[in-house]
Amino acid sequence: MNRADPAFFQIRLARSPRDLMAAQRLRYRVFVEELGGTGPLVDHDARLERDEFDPVVDHLCLIDTRRDADALDHVVGVYRLLRSDVAADFGRFYCDGEYDLAPLRDSGRPLLELGRSCVDADHRGGAAMFLMWNALADYVLDHGIEILFGVASFHGTDAAMLAPSLSWLHHHHLAPEGLRPRARDGSFQRMDLIAPDRLDRREAMMGMPALIKAYLRLGGVVGEGAFVDRAFNTTDVFLMMDTAAMSAKHKQFYESRWQPT
Image 1 (cartoon, one colour):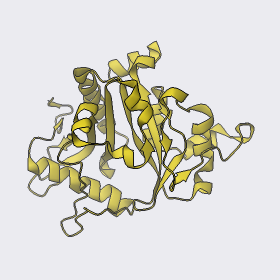
Image 2 (tube, helix red, strand yellow):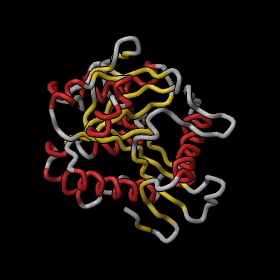
Image 3 (cartoon, rainbow, N blue to C red):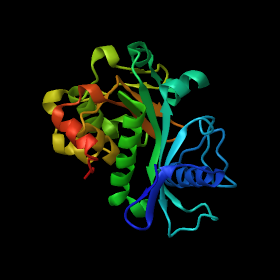
């Protein structure tokens, strides 16, 4: 899994400690410096955002070959990938800390958790997401994945500010009950904050992160309730995409390497 397009981009699974550290450096810039998050294994001196999952997951890295790899500056996009077979050996998914995943496990279907996805500020809105989705599609097809899931974050923890977007997700994109994880008690935040007849779609979409909108275009659905993550200063929603349940149009987009806009 290694291709270049355009000439200064490559995308590959992390293949060295330097790739991994560069991915953690990018995550530090985005999640710590930009969004104000932290965590018990974050190395502020070295500017690395780390956690206990890093040694067992696959890191899908977008490489800018013009940047200095020795300075850990060459990774400009990253997806962290955890398959259900690997999670079973490890003991859990990352999302287990925020959502009850029993409905997904009970389905017995091959799962892939997507996490810590981020893109360098200089590459947002361009070819980066296209290349990453392209490579992710290859990974999903190669491993026979049927359900993709993960949490996506709104910046901030004030539910009132996020109410239009959260309510739109709840009323229009709720996962089927039999596959619907629920945010864990203690940090559970209701998403049905505004009645359906009072919602304004334009207002809801304006406040929606681009990554969430991309999943919705592919037929993505959400879990019950949001999870307020005060350590990372985010409000997280559970996103899931069932490749078997995609409409023919959605599946054509996905399998032909759909480009988010």
